[in-house]
Length: 326
Image 1 (cartoon, rainbow, N blue to C red):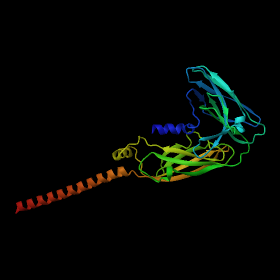
Image 2: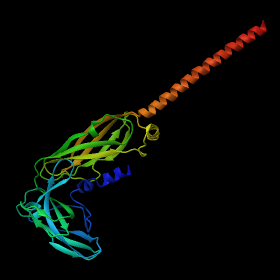
Image 3: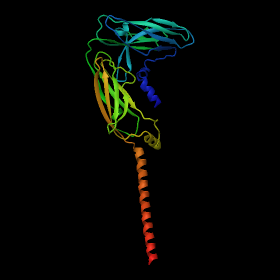
Image 4: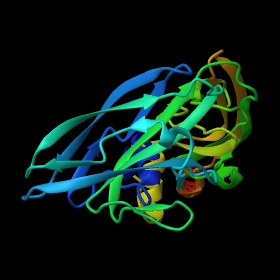
């Protein structure tokens, strides 16, 4: 459960690690993600931090690539930086760091005058070998690490966003206990990124609120013309137990029973548009119910036997007193 919590907090970062490591063997770069906004013709000034983790001086080389969304996992797909934002960023081509040295490196983004409103996305990579341009314009720098730059150019944005789907994972309807994984898919048909904000409110069969969960705890963006799947976990108060009696103990200490409805409420976009969805499911702690039924059966049988014995004793006593009186 601790691992799941950590995953929820750094969800976006973890999803891109296989392609975009935050910390390489020799270099640490921060921040991982930079979100900026600027007008056409404007020059934006920013900075990044480089840390040489090795015990010897090293020279690191920069390279730039654009990225876009592929699939629904939020992993960026990098493309050659021959146009777009990758060509607007001005950053030193190389920097030398002493052992353990931390350096703040300024860079700028020169937005062309004729830039259309929308979102533009690129990555500033740093590697220990000079960039090598392959066929098709693809830049290869060996092992690399860097930051994502997400630029918004304001203006009239066409398209919109909305919830495509909201349910439990695999649309499961019945559960025996927490945790419960909820997922929603958000579609962005606009020209700029959208960061949905809001919460998931879970109510029981009596309308009482059982939990309120942040809908986008990792502050993830949905890139233009893409769909992103978000996962939210309704976690229990205690860790998951193994085995039948472990499940009984968990269900007893963290009791939930009956029909529950999860209501998703989101706000998104510069105009704070809203969208909602709901999904119902059932929690039936069947392991605990089996134990309760067995205990009730034992109590009922014991009570009946006790009453039968008592009646027999009363009858025997009455017969004995009757004979004595005769």
